[in-house]
Length: 84
Image (cartoon, rainbow, N blue to C red; front, side, top):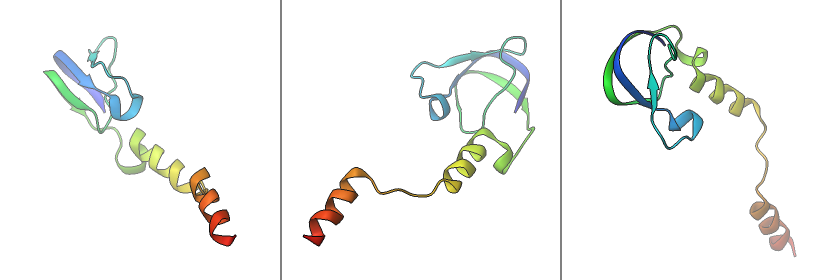
């Protein structure tokens, strides 16, 4: 999403970045807002520029679905143990 107006806007982007601290957003310095983030303080007006797989979360979901599932080390050991 594109930030059009903002007043003291702070977002929690932990879902994408893992950062524990909220991030300040403004039209001049940080005009991009991501789906799935949470407004912690302030207010803003945004323009939706992409939906579904054209969002950052959508791109992550697509990349995860394309990756073949692999057994975890525990699953490998359990399979080996059960064959013995």
